[in-house]
Image (tube, rainbow, N blue to C red):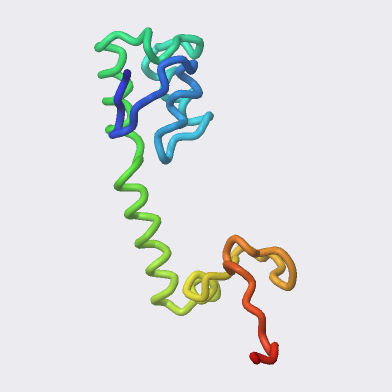
Length: 122
């Protein structure tokens, strides 16, 4: 099992899709990495040699921010927005959608379980 950037890649998947299991690498970036290292998209993760794994690992370390570093950067960016008091920061703080979605209906993922308001408690 190939382990790159702290993530185990699935053995049976083609490399272009296996690399997308790493946080911060999508399909386009995966293809750029494979082109730069000269590895075929069709090769399966369990077919990689140690040299190929090392080449992919080096390419990712040199050019891309992934996994822990990227998660930390995203969290710091959100914290900065909240500190500035921007609209997006306020939406993050209140746990509401911050990309313009309506909240009268839907938005349950962000808002959580329904809270009944104004019902007489007996």
